[in-house]
Amino acid sequence: MDKDIKEGLMQRRIDDRQSLQRRETEDFLRAEVEKYPIRAKKFWKRDYSSIEKFLSSVEPNRERWLETVGDFSEGASEDFEVEETPFLEDKEVIAKWVSIKLFSQLRGRAILGLPKGKSKFLPLVICQHGHTSSPDGDVFGLIDKENYYDKYGYKLVREGFAVLAPLNITMSEPMARSNRMALLLGKSLFALEIFKIKRLIDYLSTLKEIDKNRIGMWGLSKGGTYTLFTLPIELRIKVGIISAFFNQRIKKMVIKDPRYSCYLVTDEEHMFLPGWLREFTDSDLVSLICPRPLMIQTGKADGVSWWPFVLEEFEESKEHYKKLKVEERIQMCLHNAGHEIRFKEGLKFLQRWL
Image 1 (cartoon, rainbow, N blue to C red):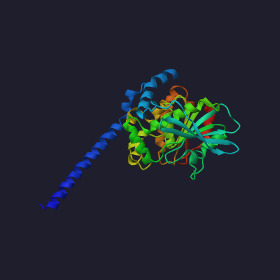
Image 2: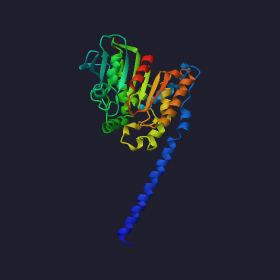
Image 3: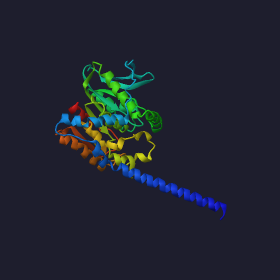
Image 4: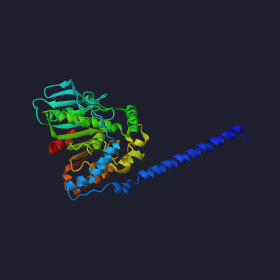
């Protein structure tokens, strides 16, 4: 047989074996992920007989969630070493960039906005920007051309809330780069950003302007990720609004479907946390937020999710509240638009619960 033909036949057999191995491996791993309901039964032992017993029963899961994302509290700076820079001032709002020391070589930055004429005991809303966005351009609306954010941070200040808009790393490549280094430490980029939020809360709790007993969090898109990830860990946050992130997590992560985007085929490497789907679908994370008030905002036209699947996951989430007889504290805001903030509905929710 001709040498070229022999080499071509050999290469085809090599490629065929590799193709089969890849497809078998994906089939196996997908099946393992989809065994979640069986697996989760081993990890969750919820007691709905009272709120106190419920909180006690999920405490081991809360600790394991912190282990899953990682904890960067060790070695943190004891002093804030606050730096401030003016950002915005008009007739109703005064805002500044605030920077605090997290570690010897790392600072945490955020915009703090306050309503003029109201200087004490304000409810605080942490307004978290998303994947390609920013505190100043989007949360406060300086360059939000598509109006996904509806200037919601700025508008909340005008409604009498203090607003903290933390600055997080954005874009897939730099997030992946930082996350790889965090993974080498057994942690994640999410852990570092969540720790920053916790330390910013520590600092703001020292200010006379802030009512430390009335803190909420509201994030859009990747900001919704941080809201869902932070509330189970940070119990000082009393109310949450998740816009354009909440999902049927197994489908979203590994099942490609033309009705929604799937993380498995994107470059958002940072979204793959070791152990996430061992026991923490979105409805299970909500059980670590319960019985605190929570709103889910989902657009039927939003390509990040397929809304019937979101409703299914929401109903599973609502069950935790129903069993504790506090179902009025969880609310679905389903709308006909896309990937965006629904300000009026969220404002009403915050005014009721915060």
